[in-house]
Image (cartoon, rainbow, N blue to C red; front, side):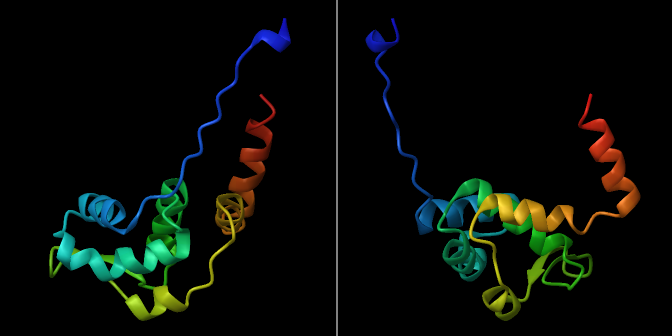
Length: 118
C-alpha cells in the first residue's frame, strides 16, 4: 500500500568555495590558485549549484563577448573577471537554459521543436 512506502528526502546543497574551485581548476586545466578569482565569482553567481555552474560557464564561453576564451597564444583559458562580476544571471538553471535557447537560430529552433514531438 502507498502508506507503507518510506520516503527519504535528501537535500543537496551547492558546492562550497574549495570544491568549486577544484572543479573549475579541473575543467580549465589550470592551477587552483589561478582560477580562484574566477571560481569565487562563479560561486557568488550560482551558489555552488553544479548544474548551474556548468551552464553558467558554457554561457560565458559562448557569449561571443570574449568573457571566457581560450587563448592559443597563451595556450590557456583567459577571462574578464570584471565583466563576469557585473554580468546579470538568471535566478535558476531553467532561466539560464531558456536564455541560451533564445540565442539559437530560428531554423534550428524549429527543427528542435519538431524533433521533440517524436
